[in-house]
Image 1 (tube, one colour):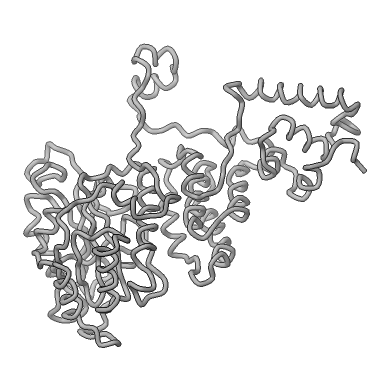
Image 2: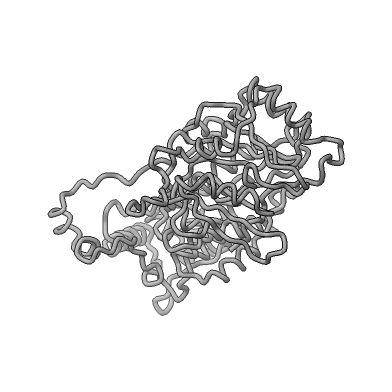
Length: 479
């Protein structure tokens, strides 16, 4: 697991940076735009909605609710420790974190004692690192937010050294289903690239961080002796997810609060219609999602055929704004196909030069891969292809059988082959019953009139040059 301190984004290099910008200067800019200093506890009480029952109290052990997790470490220690932040003990627990040499907290709640993405339960606030800040760039940011409406006005600005953390508090905590985690990550990436630009930061490359990122505790120590992390309130209006989506390009918008549809069947009807599901879920009480046996349904000897197909799709269709999600989808396909984790990581690293070439000014890094590898989790085994296509911008055509089972669908394809042969006076097979390659391509096209060349390569196992060679030919054109 990535070290909790990595990418915390403090960036403090002294009471004054190389351009002479002090924390006091940044504070003046914040105050000029209406920022009001608030206590650390005020911020966290607002973020985690104290009194509304969203996080557990230490003395209320009969109620199982997820909680925020603090992390702290002494300067001379090799390892840190986690703290479950119970609501009723929050003030004293926060004081403990603030007195540690190094302490982190974020805007999520977790099940258990580790702040891993797999254990994340709810998103209470979306928090952004904002580096390369000067009094001029911070003024530009506030001007863009308050005057131009180019990006949302943060609820809180936190000064951690000469840089900022921007807190956007959710009106209601967002449940973190596997699909929702990925969609919220896309939203955060899109907002980061909008907030962090040539006018608002001296840093050319924004830090693209997931929703699981942690930040220095408000009121805690910075790297400068005697200096504490300070918070200022700018906006009392909490945000819904869809309000935040209004600030990102249309292609990044997604209905992330989609819930599972209510069943159309009564329990008795479901028992008759889905006996295996009924036995597993109702009788045995096993509510884990069933993983489709892709290896068992793969034609040919390659159990990773679907995974390998997606690697080819990345090279054919990955774009700059979607390249991270293309790699994330590679990890998801690795889970679907039972590809070992280390092989998936190695394959992703092999793609780094290609993904960097898409935009050399913004290289694709191992940190991006480490973030994508968070999705190597069996809970993503049933992540739907339609959502992968939306996240990556790579079309994944649905294989149309019109409700027919595969055996009937293939029988129909063979019937079309036979009709074409009779009409053209040809045979799609030649010599020892082996199909000639042109015949395979033309038969596939007849059975899939809306199909693409890439689909034909995947389904037939022919090479890309072979499919392209015969794609637009007719049988009488054979050489």
